[in-house]
Length: 428
Length: 167
Image (cartoon, rainbow over all chains, first blue to last red):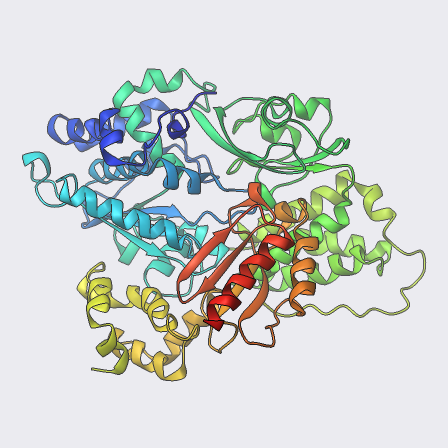
């Protein structure tokens, strides 16, 4: 285990400011402000090879360097809307190692010359937001946030903002709309947030886990960071492990660790005498991988996971055992996506609704094989035709399971026309 | 000053101070939480009051309320017991748990107990997949997580609420 982001598991009471400072906390922030230019911080993050941990894996330092330097003010917005089914890593970081996270936000703000940063938390993190507010007040009292920090001209304020239950707000432009007090619906891009973000101003949006890496990179250097993980995916990653596994939880491991090590060594394997059937490496948005020997030996990094037909995404690994029929599983994921579709793009709004109808019928044994084919066709008509990734996400489990677990559907369908169909699917 | 503003003037001023003076609309979500606190839902009158404070239309406020799941526009149980039965929780028995809780309380998902105290709802992922079955409770006291639950532990919690009501 390499605890960088989950250091609190080794250091008791790290969520208390004096303890965090005793362990070198805020030294990096002080050093950056007093002896580094903002661009030097960005360059160091670039050199570390850190990639965004929210799902897309975009190089963090490069994103920061895209900020429009001709328009001010600049903003930093933290995506703490953690809502992907299977993901619960940002919550642990913010709950138990909050100051490392906040220091990362502050370093990012300094690097991109922002004097204000908003932390957008999902509404369900109500207690966590209250804790963060207390921590922010404490930092203000200690002179780590506020005006003219460490005798420099740099000022910084942090604010929390609570969402109210909408998965779509994890999409960065929908999040910005929501923060502006509008419906959380994605924007057409370009322009991208580094040139046109919050209130139309240059904005960097980063995930919680991404930013929590930054203080350690400043403290120990890019080479140290590159000592973990792979060449193209450096660093550690917090893998949220859930589903049919003996010890679900967060595991911080180097990028490039195999599925086998995560699931069987750390996660204790499959309980109840069952065997593993499928893996969803990126939560409900993920394709289903057949859990064969090749898949289990695949390293979990941004480059390798696509070779077995899925994405690493937010690395929320859902394990599915052999008691599960995929017709049931995709009915669950479709229920989610139909509910969470924001309604802006017709293919997603209508597509998720009709796919849900079909998955309900298939799961309840009231469909024919033609319906499975129709489901696949509707999915292929949603994919790639929406403003944001939610539409695509809704099709991944559907299409991959029909392709890779065909038998699960064959045993669910009728050979003759269904006698009566009474499926009620309400509009979200 | 409208009634909402009068009652929570200090808190509303603090909320507004988080956002640029010309971007008051950003405060619509925090203001909806404030309005909802007392009765568990936001009334028609309060839509207009929030709109007046933020200089937007009441329709804008209603639209925001309708978009997000944690805001409500009609009275239901004092405690909303919201069980996650999304895929990761369902793989760990959340559907059976939800059914057990509903049976115990004599309601269907979405229903409210006869004493008006508890509304049971099935909700989407709450970022607690490793501690399923789990639920959150939304009430005037905010939102609290209850993880690694059994039907018995949920029943005890409801019994405690009922005892508190009886006092």
